[in-house]
Amino acid sequence: MRKKKVTLLNDPIYGFIGIRSSLIFEVISHPWFQRLRRISQMGFSHYVYPGAHHTRFEHALGTMHLMQEVIAVLRIKGVEISEEEAEAMQLTILLHDIGHGPFSHTTEALLAGRVMHEEISLEVMKRLNDQFNGALDMAIAIFTDQYQRKFMHELIVGQVDLDRMDYLKRDSFYSGATEGNINSKRIIEMMVVVDDQLAFEEKSIFSIEKFLMARRLMYWQVYLHKTSLSAEFLLTRVLERVRFCYQNVYKPQASDPLAYFLSRNDLNSNLTIDQLENFLLLDDSDVIQGLKSWQNHEDKILTKISDMLVNRNLLKIKIQDEPFELQAAESKYLRLKNYGLSEEDYRYFVFTGEISNQTYVPQDKQIWILTKNGSLKELQEVDAFFNSEELSRIQKKYYLCFPKNRHLT
Image 1 (cartoon, rainbow, N blue to C red):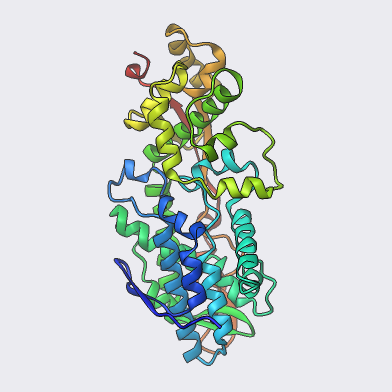
Image 2: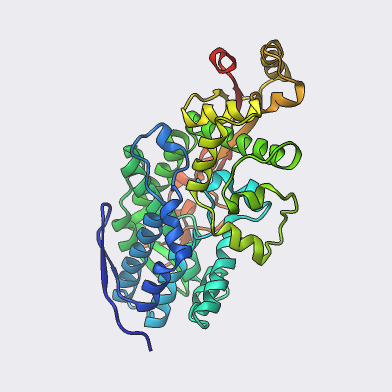
């Protein structure tokens, strides 16, 4: 039997966060979880918002704290939650992001193939479960929505879940973008469970409206800020070029786990144990170390784009509501041709694509409201504001990235 251990952590968002389970303390102390200290929460957002240097580690602890608050509120309202369930609920939300790669979303597709970070998180949870002799069985069941009490999964993955609740509040705090500063306390206080369905009291509607609008504004103003996007796109192309050099010309300097992924093209939807173990050795420092050394590499393309990223001399990016015509990119190619670049190298400097955001997804996991007469209704039935097509429409914007004149000198 594990010895009871109480640890308090001081968090700038919530104050003291308590760890009152020895199992949770051991999981947090595990090297795979400690790795999250070295994974940035917001990628390259600090290139725009200098304070945005927080990590996935703080975010995970923050979501665990919110889960503790939810458990306390629901118990007061008569929802029976055993100590074993409470521990499993905290473990589930604590480990929901453990599968993120360096700089969070930016590098995952290149380093883990088509495997999403949620799938990696699940595989890590299974490996941890083996190490802790099955102690995470219930947490895994909640994470995969296999546990009989469905509201527990909705707290992990939903339109108003604890993951979003913490990252909006935390990212708002560190970036200084006040649009994301939601009232998580009030939303949690309004939570109820009716027939195993997570719902919110009717008087919480305006808080939920603020939550959804905060998410919309944070995406367009912070997460999809054009400078952050330019940096992330450039990092993607740096890693593509490094992989090309590693496999075709000469091997650029790289840490062992990073070299493991650069040397192979067999990454697919089936993550092997070997791939998982190497992925869990990667963090932001592997990429930063590589970028610094690649600035002085003999491959001119790699040197140029690495230097641009390290020194924040980024590609110019234009964003508009309509797709860019082919001629828009071709006009930029002429400039590259004049500087002696081959056509196959154009894609590192000039490229187009699309970004999207959706405020409210009524077809997805529904937000249920407990009305004053005791009935459950979908959010859009209670508040006409959420019937707006604009809220549920997938908003798309299109970008064109290209070099400034000084990039090519």
